[in-house]
Length: 461
Image 1 (cartoon, rainbow, N blue to C red):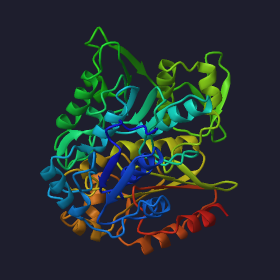
Image 2 (cartoon, helix red, strand yellow):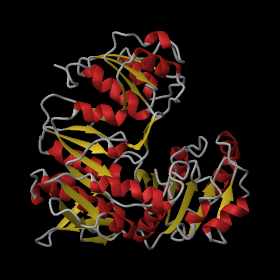
Image 3 (cartoon, rainbow, N blue to C red):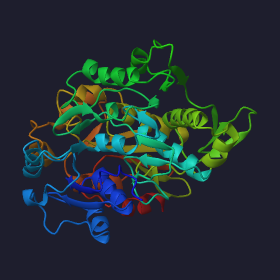
């Protein structure tokens, strides 16, 4: 029996090739629904995964004739535009049109909904919770933004799971619904892991951005729970315990010790619990996940037992290669707060080793001259700090040219190295002395195809 409402069995997905959208298509197909989709470009791994399930569109592009009156609903991804021909056809036919978050809510109306929000940490917290629940054989559904080890899909919708764990993105819901996604899930248990202004193209000021989290906090229902980072100044402004019918739980970094580059948590009995992740931001993520799991009936000792096998979410401070006196990690970090947290954590974990850290400016905000000053002093921790960006990306995003000296000035680090050619960056890294030194590569992109595995082999050899 399908997990979607019985009235929604014939579905068409516009922009089916998106990271989360193709996972939704696969999850719906798996649950027995009849699924079709379209997109104007589909990349790997979505292409192969959709093809294997028989869901890959025969042609790339938009085909209004695919949208027919017998469809129960259309789900539109953020990649589509408001004037998308298929979307216009669906509206013309009077079909139900859902954004991704609206559909997830529709499919989970009868479940307890846990929504993890925050500018940073939400993927890791969600991953931690899923890992612990699965370790202990609990039934749950989920929607998460990163591929997790041991999980085939990033979305699961079933009939019998009593709860759903949702990564609550603050980005817009769809091209025709400008509300943040996490406002549409209607959480019972909500988490705010931290607030640090990003998405300058959508939220023009810090105040407008913060207001979205205030709305989320205020949506916590009677007898609901709001779990928040008690040390984050921006979070403090929106989580003032103002509703007597809501339970407010603040958390900080989990107590720990670091020994020989390894982190150990301290439980209530001061016993050391080894973990495979590190850094203050991850210690906060662990605390947040522990509070959620406690609300879901997982005892402390069971939480720690499961935590021992958690390796982290894909691309979140992920180990590439380890040698005798050097390690290479990659991280999804690109926003100022994430950059600072990751670089600082890495240096603190290996204080005796030289740290070479590279950041690729890749997103609209990070390449915007108006936003760049937010990076001031966020990259002070590494011994060698490198920033890379491709001028062609600026052209593609229709942003003004960015002189390397402007980037250096924004970071307020005189010895910052700035590269705009990936071959020159590779040559610089290959020329470094890697004895007793670590490499950290941070980007939501690929440094324009830089062979990180080859570089890591050289660094750790």
